[in-house]
Length: 159
View 1 (cartoon, one colour):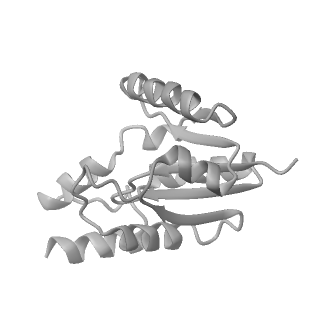
View 2 (cartoon, rainbow, N blue to C red; view 1 turned 90 degrees about the vertical axis):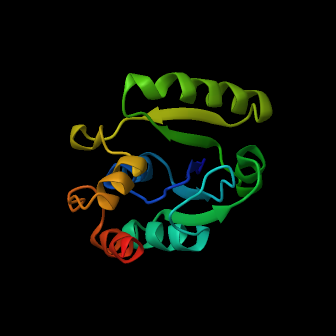
């Protein structure tokens, strides 16, 4: 059986930590959809289209990864996409409570789709999109945390 997984997130911007999780998932599953959430509750730095494009650029070398934007409920998107698994990243214990709550809700909404948790490589455990944006706003270097194309895009936004 070919298993399709979905890795959802806002990815504002996509970091090397996100990319690490996506690449790990691509080794485990036949097809991985990076599902970039519109997430109107947040005020993203990048538009949905820009975030999709940055994720596509960052992960272009991984042939079994597809990047899509979505603006509806993850349960509906995952079902329509034919996903069997939702991949979530855990950086630290502090992520677990929120992710556990999401997994429980998704299990109720879509009982046929399993949630699995992956951890990034050690050097990426402290990276978050929020920290990346804050460091960039304050003039710090984010070279070690994002793909060069993402770095260019952030630099342009911060000007």
